[in-house]
Amino acid sequence: MLIDYDMPLWRPPSEANSFILQATLGCSFNRCSFCSMYRTKQFVVRPLEQVQSEIRAMARAYPGTRRVFLADGDALATPTEQLLAILQALHLAFPRLERVSSYALPVNLLKKSVDELRQLREGGLTLLYYGIETGSADLLKRITKGATPEVMVTGLTKAKQAGLTLSATVVLGLGGQAYWREHIDATAELVNRVELDYLSTLQLMLDPTIEDEFRRKFREPFQLQDDQALLEEQARLIERLEPPAPLTFRSNHASNALALAGVLPRDRTALLDTLATALAGQVALRPDWLRGY
Ligand code: SF4
Image 1 (cartoon, rainbow, N blue to C red):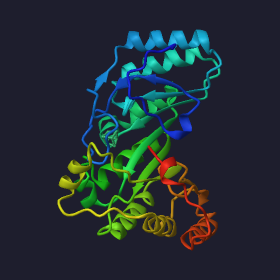
Image 2 (cartoon, protein in one colour):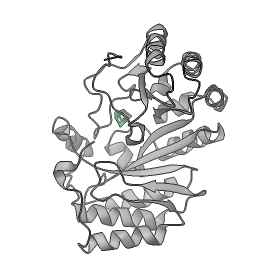
Image 3 (spheres, rainbow, N blue to C red):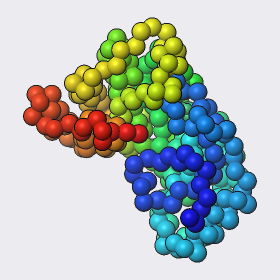
């Protein structure tokens, strides 16, 4: 292999054909109770020379690269100077580069100023993937997300002011059977306060290695939602979304029972019609064995 990746390696579905470059390893937070992605890794910012050497190796093999995803869980935690050096090396190595993206955590956007984010945008960072998960302050505590709705609105607003494209995810099912309405209503409220470009839903899937911890931190018995209930969550969310700018909505992640795609508010009726057909049992849902993160 051209690059000796530090495993496990994760990337958003839309980065399937991108050059994945590990600017950092692990997640600098690593404490969300529903997430097992980086539990086996210690967070570290990789030395710049190592990252630059991988860029050079990739440039020799694939000089026509157009898209780069900076891994792991929050490459945006890298000091701004170092991130600017990585972006410069990427744009020098790949003359046809169109897009550089990374995951962003609430804490990353809190720590970087609008000016730093703007420098990164001008340096060629174009797109951030951001996990909102839920807009409910209570549920954010129960899943130990380490952020409040206000912190998320502040950070996402800063990133938008800096000119970055924003793609956010929410996790259907995070409120369980007891709090699903609170989860959806507060999530719609938060999304309606920020100018996102893309919004995707995932369905909660608890990895057996963290399920006990998730249930303990939830502080009361947690009952998972079934597919029918999750489709109802999806419909309630779509009904309530009034984004300040056209929002591309998707549920194409492999965890979802039903793949949806449209632009809100324009396609609201069509999306709700598809959901109503699925709720009536007239559309085949993705079988369990084809689902995953
Ligand atoms: S959900 Fe994101 S921030 Fe939370 S532990 Fe997982 S990778 Fe880190």
